[in-house]
Amino acid sequence: MTVKQLTLPELTEACGALGIGGVGLWREPVQAYGVEAAAKLVRDAGLTVTSLCRGGFLTAMNPAERARALADNRTAIDEASALGTDTLVLVSGGLPPGSRDLAAARERIADALSVLAPYAEERGVRLAIEPLHPMYASDRCVVSTLTQALDLAERFPASQVGVVVDTYHIWWDDQAPSAVARAGASDRIHAFQLADWTTPLPAGVLNGRGQLGDGAIDMREWRARVDAAGYGGAIEVELFNEGLWARDGVDVLEETARRFIEHVL
Amino acid sequence: MTVKQLTLPELTEACGALGIGGVGLWREPVQAYGVEAAAKLVRDAGLTVTSLCRGGFLTAMNPAERARALADNRTAIDEASALGTDTLVLVSGGLPPGSRDLAAARERIADALSVLAPYAEERGVRLAIEPLHPMYASDRCVVSTLTQALDLAERFPASQVGVVVDTYHIWWDDQAPSAVARAGASDRIHAFQLADWTTPLPAGVLNGRGQLGDGAIDMREWRARVDAAGYGGAIEVELFNEGLWARDGVDVLEETARRFIEHVL
Image (tube, rainbow over all chains, first blue to last red; front, side, top):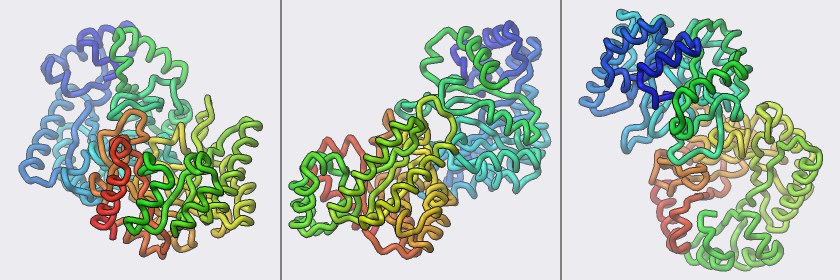
């Protein structure tokens, strides 16, 4: 998504040229290219698919909507399996229209996970609950802190359900560092994503994630926390940013790689 | 601020006509009108000043800036005292330019409070730390949760430093209900403010607070929590909303009173 202006072939070529060995993919471009074709493309390029984004949106109360969401998540799990990644990122969903009950919405997520998690495990895929910044609590994700995500994940085996540590969403939270340690202790850090916090936020607050080093987050400190928690997986950079999307994608990828070296390695 | 399009005389008259017995004031219009004149105006109208907004911005590292901030907060305390309110709301301040250290910024707030709190108490004014939504953590307020605000406040006597419970800022936080109880148990709820959470958020995310009943927050549930915590003070409605500001102020005040009756009483 950081360089969504690139086609999948352009992306794999640019990753190869920069020595980037892994890539997190989103479902929409993968589906547009064809799941099997995308899997072959990245495999032939020698790339690891670090995660697939995203399943989730599991908070609907309406039975037909819930059934559709479960079916879509099974499809997402199948796609993750086909791509050869072991991690499907879940954005849990917001409040249904007219509802003001965050706690009940979180329980419906747990209910859905109890159906989806065994299905995922059978296909070698772990579900990774991503807490989203509290500014998305009403319309996108009622899971707002890493602690809440862990409270949900720990109802299931770590081989089935874990969490995403994304600096953009949790950097402000003084309880997040201990939650990172807690997540690591039970091997539940299934993905580690970076984006910087820059202001002013754009309208809608979706596409204002900052390039590494441009904002308020100490990336190396978060990396050290995740390292100390025993995480040995990929580090993904996920920037939703209109400014970056308007530029040449290869140029943005090169810049991101430089920033990664400067601020994370 | 909900009806900032009204002059202070228009505001006091409209409050009287609607049977509203108290009003929270902001410093800028009070200063423009004259502090003593404003105090006389609201007193003659039979209105209670429920709180003064706002002091704070106590996170600067630069010594001259810190001295200016302390001086400005002493002035704010004096103004609160002159207006006859016992509560000065503090918005603590964001990260200084170039800093990424939230914890250190929070410590500088505590340092400043140790200077300001005795000064305030001598003048019959309590300082009320307002946690602001985490989307303001970098540029406006490094105190993002009610728990953090209490952790700061509890270093001081409750007669000196308490907290603001504002639904807009804490509604998403599953730990806030227990923090409300904790705050009430030590008599530290110094103000209770309402605004609803509506999306999409506007650019800059400052002026998108929803009219009561328009958004995701169960106002009556929060009122019950604050009641159960033993709070017996005023309930303020504080809406920063470009749409409301563009309308006739008396009309907005009437609407707000109706919504208060419908969703809070």
